[in-house]
Image (cartoon, rainbow, N blue to C red; front, side, top):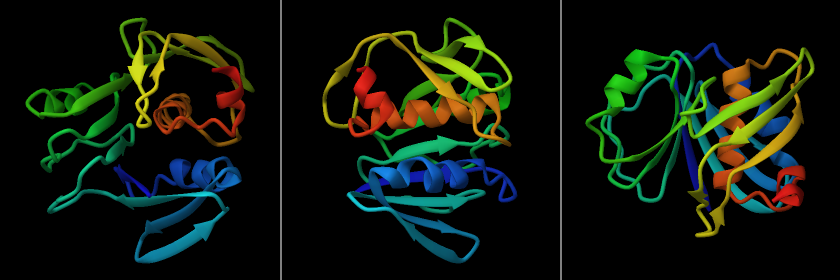
Amino acid sequence: MTSVLIAGDEKDDEFMHMFRDRLSETYRITYIKNKSVYQWGSGYELLAADYSSYSELRTEGTVFLLKKSCIPDFDFPPGAAVIACSENEEQIKALKSCQTHVITCGFGKTDTFSYSSLSDERIVVSLNREITALSGKKIQPLEIPLEIPEGISIYSMIAFTALRILLDDFNSEIGELI
């Protein structure tokens, strides 16, 4: 089982919707949010916990998915992977002293993930440098054309795609492109 810890505004449900609507097609997801537990899908198990902040973290091999507005005020466990919004200067500043692997998502070519094309309904997400998936596979730079679900921000779409690539999501349309 892989753990994905999501941090940021409690009212922001974008990641919850994408886990339910997209990842549940290939994963068994247990999603914890607002004192509620949801389960969707079947397959490899993912645990997702969605809180505004965390008081204590004793985990290994965890992926953190930061919402765009999140300013992390907690310590990340060593070796964690953090998917962050490069456009949020406060968020990036808070991550500078962390001993984590930060994967930036934004609108610039210097970000690990950005986009090369955008319309009202579609986005082409770009991986701009090699990364290593949780499986250990090296993923080379690539571009992934995707539909943007209604109500999902550009950052959330890019960050969610980064998560899927880290998960080495081979049973999805992303896996077919790699």
